[in-house]
Image (cartoon, rainbow, N blue to C red; front, side, top):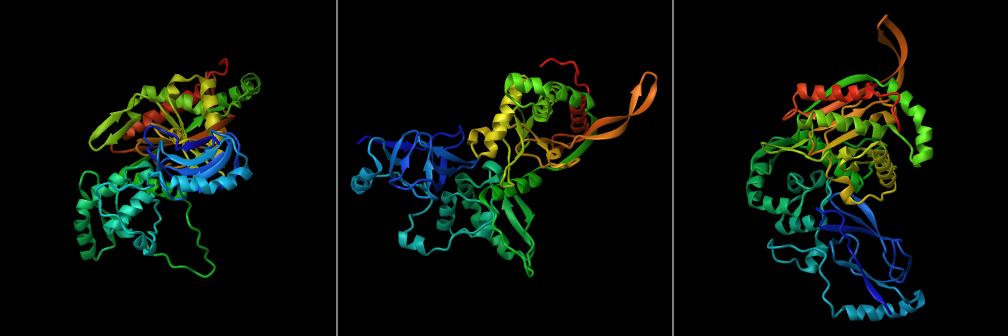
Length: 446
C-alpha cells in the first residue's frame, strides 16, 4: 500500500494558516487526480483544495472548523488500494496513527493554561456579526472577553479581520476598556487603535422585529465585506468627484475590432481592460494616487496593481487584482482580466490573487447604474466607478460651429481619501482618466 500525505498548500506570501470549512469527501471514498477534496477559508478568500493524487481517502487528520498551518498534512491518501481494501485497512491506519503525535489544529502561545475538554464542551459559542478564526475565539474564551468587547477590537488583518496579534496586543488594555464601558451611560464603545489612542464609535441601533419579518444569517464572506466597508469609512474621510465623459470614439473602435480580436486571440475584448489601460496611464501621470497611509507616513507604491471589483453569483463581492498592470499591453490585460473574472465566478481564485492591489476600479454600469459613490478598498486611497454607457444628445464642437449629435456618454465617479488626496489631485486624476478615454485613437491597431 502506497500511503501519501495531503499537505496544506501555500496560498500566498502572507497566508500562514487556513480554516477547514468543509470536507468534500469521506474516509473510504475514491479520489481522482485534481478532484476537489476540501474547502478552506483564509483571511483573504475561500477556495477548494484539489487532490494531487489518485486513490482512496484513508484518514482526515483535521475536522471542519480546525485551523491548519501551511505545510502541515491534512489527510492520508492510499494511492494503490481500491475502495474495498481501504475500508478494511482504515481501522489499522487509525491504530497506527495513535502512536504518532499529530500537530494540534489550534496553538496558543503564552496566553493562558489550556482549557479542559469538559469545560470547552459546556461553554456557549461566541456569536457575532464579524468572522473570527477558531484561534481568536479560543483566546477570547480563555481571557473572558465578551462578544461585545471582541467586536470593539480594531482588526489589522485582511478586510479588518481580528488576528491573533490584534487580540494579544489588546489584552494589556482589557481592564481599561471594561472599566470605561461599564461606567459609561452613553451608547458608545471605547476602542484602542493601533497607536494606543482611544476612539469612540457608536453602537448599532436595536432592531425591532415586525410581523412577517425573516431573519437570514450573513454568510462568512458577507460578514468580512461588511466589516471591511465599515472600517474603510471610519479610517478614511471619503470625497467623491464626478465627470461625464464622451466615449463615442472608444465605443466605435471596440465595435470595429472586437470580432477580429476574438477570432485571432481567442479572447473577448470587454471594456474593463480598456479602462485599466487608461487608469495605468493616469496613475503614471499622478503617482500620488497610487499610495497608502501608515499613520503619518505616506507609502508611494512602485507597482501598479489594479483591483477589479467583481460580483459573484451569490451576490457577494470579490476584488481580484491585475498585478503589474503597467507592464501589460491590451492583449495581456484582456487575457488576465478574463481569466480572473471567470475563476472568481467559479470560486477558483487563490488568496494571493486578491491581495496587493494599489488602486481599484468598479463597474457599476454593468448593473445599468449611471454612477455610484464607491467605498475605498483599504489600504488604498482611491477607487474609480465607471457608469453605464448610454447614447445621449450632446453638443459637438466643430471648426464651423457647434452642433447637436448622438454620442456615447458615461459618468465616472472617483472616491478618494481626503487625508492625503485633496480635491485638486483627485479631480485632476479623474479628468486625465476621462481624457484618455475620450481621446481614443479610432485607427489604433490591435
